[in-house]
Amino acid sequence: MFDQPDLEQLPCTGLAGLDGFTLRGNTEVTGIAQDETGARVEMTDRGTDARETIHAEHVLGCDGANSLTRTAIGATLADLKFDRRWLVVDIATTADLGQWEGVHQVCDARRAATYMRFGKTRYRWESRLLPGETGDDFHSLDRLYPLIAPWTKDIPAGDLEIVRGSRSSDRNRRPVHSTTATALSAGSIHTRRRRSTSNPVA
Ligand SMILES: Cc1cc2nc3c(=O)[nH]c(=O)nc-3n(C[C@H](O)[C@H](O)[C@H](O)COP(=O)(O)OP(=O)(O)OC[C@H]3O[C@@H](n4cnc5c(N)ncnc54)[C@H](O)[C@@H]3O)c2cc1C
Image (cartoon, rainbow, N blue to C red; front, side):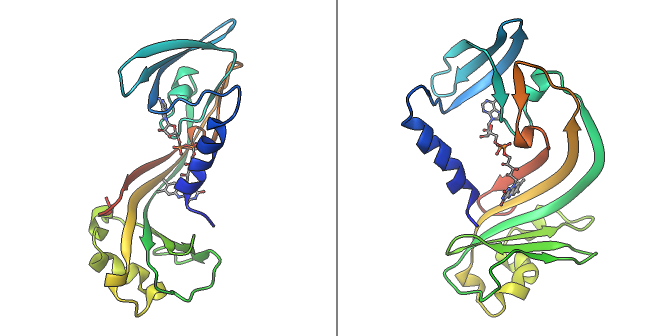
């Protein structure tokens, strides 16, 4: 198990030293248009507001659930009618939870849940939100504690730090269109909306 931000840093670090690659951070793609020779990509440097247009033979859109690439190729979304709200919380603690190291899946028809450890001091809980509940209902450890107590047992709340709280909404929708010069990857195909904060949970 590993923490997603650690993984995301790896390709950035690796690509930065490679010949033939230019890594441009803090840059927003604002438009993609295809023609018979490839695609035109418009972008804005968020630091300087400088705009630029480049031509590419191919574009691979890895731009997540709200993919501009997906919109640019005119993909329509087939709604698979699956929409559930989950609370996702990462907690840091040096305390030993003494749990089995695999992924715990709680098959509770009322409130399904997941628990896992990743890294030496990081733990993740995911819990299905019940009708009427929002992420705000679990903004503090006091409110969160009943959900995680089966794992944390007698570890005092003061030894636990919420490092990330999110409300995730699983909306299963798939694009049903693709074109030659532009393609999509991962989250831009399977959409999953996310609100994420460091603390409190929102
Ligand atoms: C709350 C939550 C917890 C999760 N936890 C896990 C987990 O523990 N393990 C796991 O494997 N998966 C987890 N997932 C799923 C995982 O986050 C996604 O499947 C994954 O991040 C999708 O990767 P992606 O590269 O397609 O999109 P993203 O990770 O969303 O990356 C898209 C990138 O494109 C950039 N971008 C978007 N639009 C533009 C634009 N116009 N111009 C320039 N850049 C742009 C964004 O800034 C972002 O950096 C979680 C999801 C949620 C919602």
